Each structure stands twice: as C-alpha cells, then as structure tokens.
Length: 439
Image (cartoon, rainbow, N blue to C red; front, top):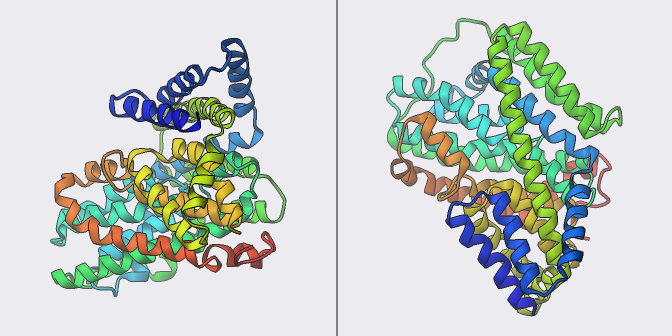
C-alpha cells in the first residue's frame, strides 16, 4: 500500500514535471491522484486539503520571504553591486586571475546582503563579464565562476531558503540557522575560489594591474553602508529586538534609503521591483499551499515513515545514511528548484536526521547546501541559466569549467555534513544550539 502510494505520488509528479506542468500545479495534482488511488474518502480529503492549504499559509513568519526578496532586489538595482565589487577587488587584487577571485568574493558579499543566488548571478555577472572580457578572460570561465559562486547567497544570511526550512521544519530557530550559514556559505565560496584560482594560474591570468583612483579607505567607506545591512538585520535578530519577519521590513527600509542616497533607481525601476517581488511571492505561496496538501497525503499514507524504515534497513551507520541522503538530494536539486524541494523533502528526511543524532540546524544547512549546488546544474538549474544568459555563453561552453568547481562544491558539502562543528560552532558560541557535535 505504501509502496504504491510512493510510486503514484512521485511518479505522477515527475511525469508532469517533465511534461512542463508548473511545479505548484504538479504537486497538487499528484497529491490528488495519490489520494484517489489510496482510497481516501473524497469529502474528507477535500475538506482537510482546504484546511491544510489555509493553515500552511497562515503564518506570520512567511511574511519574511517577500520582504527579504524585496530588500535583495533593492540592493541589486540600487548601486550596491558595483561598490561591493570594488571592495572585493581591493581585497583579492593580488591573486592570479584576480577577477575570478573578485567575482567569488563579491558574490559572497552580495549574498550576505541580498540572500538570493539568482540576484547575485545576475548583478555580479552583468558587471564582471565586460571587465573580464576586456582583460582577455575566457567568457566561459568567467560565467562558470559567477555561476558556481552565486549559490553562497542562499547560505550566507539573510537567506529565504533557511527561513522557509525553519517554517517547514516546525519552527527551527532562524537565528541559529542564520549564524550557522556563515561558515557553511564561506566554505562553499572558498572551495569555488580555490578551483577558480587554480584554473586562472593554469591559463596564465595575472594579478590586478589596475590602479584604483580612490584610496583604500574611500573604497571601504563606499561599501560599508551595504555591509551594515547584515549587521543591522543579524544584530536585531540575535539581540531579540525584532523577529526575522520584522528584520525583513527593516532591511527593505534600509535598502530603500540607500537606493535613494545613491540615486541609482527611479520610480519606474521601483515599480518593476515591487511587481517582480509580488509575482515571486505569489508563486512561493502557491507552492507552499500545494505542498501542504502533499504533506497531508504523505502523512496519511505513511510515506515518510516507510522511507525512514527503508533507509534504516539499509544501514544504521550514521555516515552511510548521510551519504545516501546527500546523493539523493544532490540529484533532486538538479530537477527541482529550492522552494518545492525544501517543502517536499524536509518532512521526509528530517525525522531520519533526528534519529541518527543530527540537529535540526545542521540538517537544514546540509539540505539547503545540497539544493543550491543543484541550482548550477542542468536541466533545471536556475542559476546556471541566469549566469549563462548574463555572460552571453552557452551551457556546453561553461560545462568544462563548472565540472571541477562542482566537484569542489561537493567536497565542501561533505565537510559540512560530516564535521558538525563547521555549521554549528558559530551558533554554539552565540548560545543558540546546545552543542556543536552530534547529539
């Protein structure tokens, strides 16, 4: 019975996914088909599904997602990206192939402000690509570095993915997830930077020979207001001055003020930003509503418990189980965007993670890291397509550069997975988690 439900639910979902049906609709339809096949009473299912949709959206914490999204968009169009790139070049201009290293560091800075890997790939790629082209860099190399470093934006806080996981997992501390995201995101960025510099050395790219017109202190002063956004948001959350949702509002107000001060955004751009944020937020809310129905169907048919039992029957070794989960999530990340994947797989794998002594914070960071790595790979990789579009290159061209960086990203993933201190030491020092090792 359970095996039949698993095959029907995920089989029908992936059939619709490959047929081009929108993911949110596919989740809802697959859930309905599974409910019918499983023999659930139609009247009870319809009533419960409606209640689940409403209760899934009736959350104050969900308001954080559109606010952080809008704040990131304001940063993207408000002149922040150029200032962060100047700072990054100042810090790593001595590195061979410095523009690649600058791209990585700038994406990490921008990710720490915007919380969006797609926004980072778009903003940094549009500025870095012409600079790298002028200095004779291979456009495919430039695009690959930008694509692989952009996902740090979903790990270094503030991060919409971590907020979504917190809600889906039943209220895991957002502050703990955010603090854990620093070393997790930095480890991913460092892994990409190492490969990017190694490739640059191999291709004979040199360090920076550009003389900055402004003194170093002025470059720092120009960038500090953008970096202060992180200090204000995280400081407010950690000191208890405001919740994650209220932090999103503060970020919007602060980023809007910066955009006005920098005078790089007009009313037309503001309207477009608001419209994009509304459309994106509506899509996420529809996904959450559909996923609430799927969660109900999965719970009714016993799918999470069956998967847990199946994995535990393969091995009771913590390291083997984590390897299986990582491989599965990496593959799923190639086919699903982050939002639906978090909503679908959190209730499936979180109980398994808890049973082997993994903390909710550690699992959440591992989950998001898996899925953002998948965003740089075909066939669905959103960051891959945005990065190729901005860099004006084809997927076939960037693949040979992405592959070694992908291997480095997976290596960083396994370090984060098997060394709990990497994601947990910072929240532990902030007294947000009781331990920085296995429970």
